[in-house]
Image (tube, rainbow over all chains, first blue to last red; front, side, top):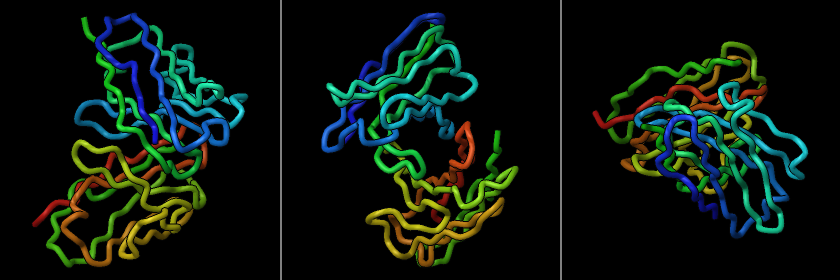
Length: 114
Length: 107
């Protein structure tokens, strides 16, 4: 099970840190990623991190602003989001998987608005 | 980036009918393609990966085929619980990309 938290309302230019607590799976054993869905829109992959956290990949719009990370001791995944923009407004899903995305959380909502 | 194009955008179908959804990639993604089902208010669910392998617990009425740039998801006999939004997703190259989705609605 994956449970996201940390979403909320933030002003443009602000920061948020999303967290994803895993249970029943060990985060360090898997590639993990974040996928987002803007209101009424489709799915957009945001970032991936490999098993040991040594490789990170980002969608172009997130490069330089977002950082994906893991804390194996806490069995958790994170997404640090800086310089937030209105088009970052979305439901953010924490997902286990590298190829097929096998396990999804229920998401945490990020709203960027003044 | 690889652009994934799904067709049609909406499919109106009666229960029991056979349904075929299409997904086209702007360049070859080999067999590195997955399909997901999403119902309102729910997270997506993995149906198919590696173009044709059913994920754990997915009923046999769901099947996937294709390779390269052309892919299909077939539902052999549509059940009431299958009315939903379906996405394809390529994981052959970075950035990972999704199609825009096909809605399967009741006719």
